[in-house]
Image (cartoon, rainbow, N blue to C red; front, side):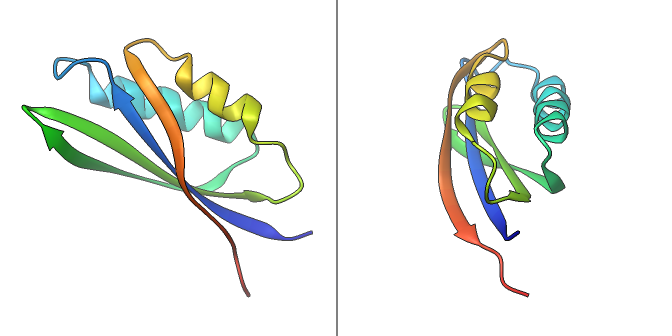
Length: 90
């Protein structure tokens, strides 16, 4: 059983979106999807809009489409896309 490191970029639908609430909900979704070692960062995009970058590890045999659909389905989210997916060594 190998592990993968996944990096997801979540774009809020407006600069006024509550990023703290989005981060909390995203963490709940990742934990429910058997993700671990979760880290979050905020990345300035433009005009006061900040993206949330979620880093986490997960078993490589698990399907990721459902997890991404849940992240996209959170309120106040414009998009959620995998921006990095790599096998963990060690």
